[in-house]
Image 1 (cartoon, one colour):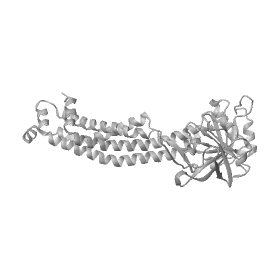
Image 2 (cartoon, one colour; image 1 turned 180 degrees about the vertical axis):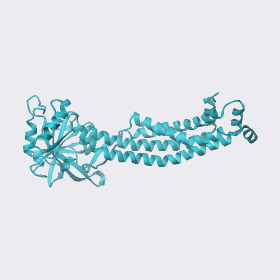
Image 3 (cartoon, helix red, strand yellow; image 1 turned 135 degrees about the vertical axis):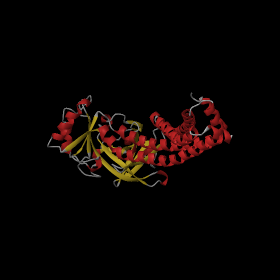
Image 4 (cartoon, helix red, strand yellow; image 1 turned 30 degrees about the horizontal axis):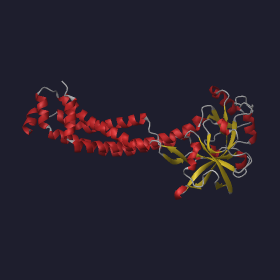
Length: 388
């Protein structure tokens, strides 16, 4: 015979202060857990969105990042001539040989220096990469000292409005447009024409070549042909997988920090739940005796008190989820350890993350309730009635 749930709910109403205090402690743990995981989710999503499954990025062989890669003009021309490179309606290859440089710039409001990616692209880059859209101003013109900046850059750095100038490489560059990139890390970059950046930074060499595949399902063959060509000495990657892999290390570290910090806080919350439930068992000893006298088995008493702890935890978990929801979409930034550049991204609170937060709260409730519940179930009828 099971003890009705209404019995536990009435008991919780009779102890509003201790119930609310315990639930609030768990809520804070869940809110911190969700916030830290949302940080990792947002960073990972920004990097994953940077690449397209239809594109291939080519680097110098054994280079693990654009920063330490180098591809000659001749190699870029050879790649552009392959039949697996997609063409636009005029027959021109959808390919963008690119320069990649990281420059230190001052953040707004005396926020200190931050490393910013300055990417030199070909005019075809806006067609090669899907989701790139000029949202203010216009694209840069070929042969000029003009640049466009991502929306993530524009909100974090001064003098980034259309018409302003930004100085790097001992040159002044006029900002003629802002672009969005579907929330990807490109929004943290400055783009200009590769031919203008090359003589200023690294000379007659590109850092990467990105192109759209004629047939995205034929990547394995494309990769084999590129890496097997003795004229090129390159490695080829699906663009989405390449950028997603760049997020792995930092995302794992952020996940570990989230679990570590939340775990330390959870210890305190669990002890709070233990104290609350032990106090409930002590104050309700006569009730426990009556329940046992009425024929309820000890395991029913155990399940009843454990359920009470879980209900408190669910309440705390729900409050924690509500506390964490406002950070969804909040823009922050961190350093991409692969390129050592700053990437702006938004906290990403997903339904799966909220579910994990609730499960975390339930686990805390079970850990905090199991010992007091066992004590309640092991009480002797004579002792409990005498205590009353």
